[in-house]
Length: 442
Image (cartoon, rainbow, N blue to C red; front, side, top):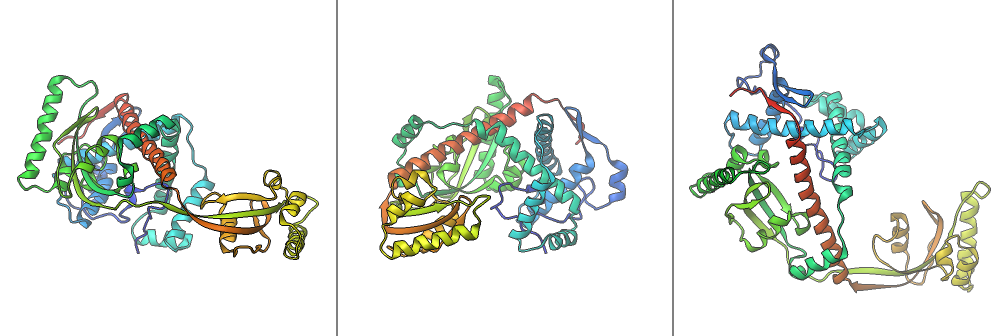
């Protein structure tokens, strides 16, 4: 069985999407390990590190299998090598930066991630190891791959995500420019080809790259497949996926694309669009979604919290809350009981009142107990990370919170766009400032 690495993970593992190697050598078209070992050599120098032909050969096997499994036409070996090597260089540069800046992943974090992968595939750790072995994947190599993906996620968080800020004025400006009520639930399935520009490109270089982009567009209009052109010609990070980005909501679109895709029809191809990093060609594959109001079910509740301590056990606290529940059900005022007994000092002043609670406002255990409690009834004592509670549900309502939803969605959109744009700039700067020497012959 092949292990499925589900998208619910907070990282992606592109090099492991196929978990066994295809018997095809990048150098000769046959799986000759002995010959590969004899011919192994340095094909790129990346700062103080090197990339070997055997590493590229192994990566290419995995890429070729992915392309064939999708039914994509394979580009020339030269183009495929170029795409694969560039991806390896960018990855190596990030790992080097992580090493030099102290980004580490301990074994405990790694083991938790692997247990999560096993759980999501409904496997034990031993069963996961066995499945990987059956698919020809070395377990130690798998662990190292997962470790590196977590490291790259932490590095990006530090270098990009933590530096992104969105202020209220930006949100209001965005809402003023966009018809959010019409686009909040729309999603776009699109593909992308990038013809990259060097930093501080000259007018001659810009003209040359523009002609290349126009040539790619002309080839597509003449009948060549967009995905095949992306694999062989694109400089984008999704080139080896045929330029496919899949379904994206507005919050996941780069600013440049968000200004183009809404005006396109399904199946339409854009003209080359220039940005700071090159010329982009977009294909809108599909569009889905409709506008609608956004509502939320809220609960009016109040609670009593009692914490355990070194001298007060869980059993004693639970018994005490059971007695308070009986008193409230027998006629004692819940609000007065909360004021006198609750350890939640803020809500205790209000008689335990939590106000109108929306989904996600409370920790999951509290929300579950609250949702299961009937109006005007009091729950049994239950425990959360804060202590032991009883909760009384006073009322429920469905509220239209479209405006708040749109503001929150706008903040998410702007943040994600900034992260994407800053990530591209960061990786480009990392690449431009590095020493790269190519030794891969045609």
